[in-house]
Length: 52
Figure (cartoon, rainbow, N blue to C red):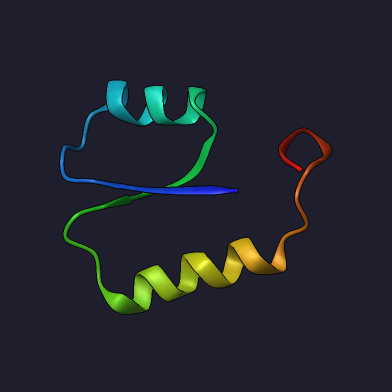
């Protein structure tokens, strides 16, 4: 599972990140609370066979 952070909000950037395997994209600036929530979601969700 990959988490990416970026400062430019564009559909092209998000689409490129998703194509590269990113499943969560955090837009800057983000809060510590938001980051912890995403990390918690990633750790609780089992990895798919394609990402192991």
